[in-house]
Length: 362
Ligand code: ATP
Image (tube, rainbow, N blue to C red; front, top):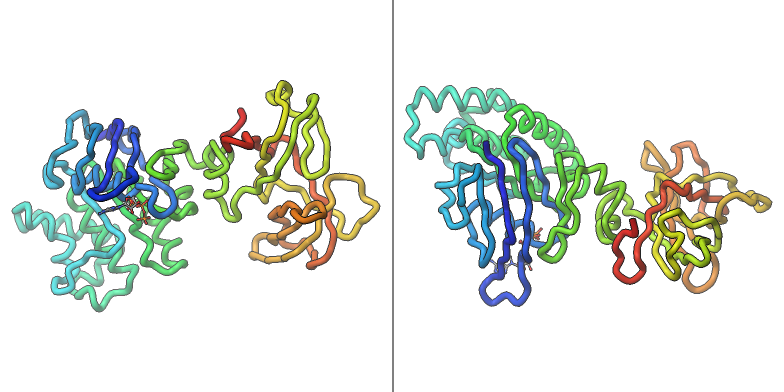
């Protein structure tokens, strides 16, 4: 069993004033794939490096499979790593690169050959085994790095932005392959990325980090659909969640100049709040239908066809600060900049946040 337990991990770099990780606790189950997601500088690499033994925490504890490894050297943790830079040796063949870690461990040659053949097959590298990295594409080099990690039969696989050097198309295809390989191996995996799409697609669970802390931990659907605060809602999703100022008074919710009964859990609430809604949950109809009475009138500012949908940037309300709402309409929806449309904010698609703390009001 290779479950990972992180408890109260605090790390401040020498000379640093802020904590790179600030009391982080996280359990990863045996065989689970957890993604650490967050903006640059939020501490995800630091957390991964502490797991790897490349940094030691100032406080807290790390156990892997029940053993305290907090201050153990990397080679004594039975884990393997894949980093952002391909980190393949340019003067060794693909075969030698993949077998490198095993050779260092003095594994018998026949066994290394068998393992290398297995990993090369899995990562579609068999035809390239005798090539040097300079004669490989970026994607193939990245596969070599992954192959080199998986031959080690480690209890834990750590990956730090392993796809970030690949172009968009390759990233997408290799992402799916990587998911399949790790699923089949069943290795406990911790994966760092700042790419929310990657996090949602790969993780059994996603830990969203901000300024050294985990702000939400959940399965991808949960963090996407029920962000714990407006930061998470704004960080996940493309486009990010829309946010609108709103008020509740006497059981009535007023949002974008439209009043409706407040949901049951906000009946006792009074004052300002923030309403969040995803672009794909906003109904849209009635181009230039000025007689319409359903929903909220909005003006179309930008129209962006994406192929599978049309993304509209709309503004609601007049005055110095109209609210901007991104709406995902069916690909056949023909609106042009300057048109008016009517938007329908379905009650069950709305999420509510405290205006001050920005935390979800559940
Ligand atoms: P990125 O996506 O940019 O790699 P990250 O989320 O992985 O960011 P970390 O690299 O863990 O973030 O950095 C967390 C904080 O610690 C940042 O404020 C960063 O400036 C600081 N930091 C990271 N490494 C060092 C270091 N070696 N010395 C001093 N400060 C560091």
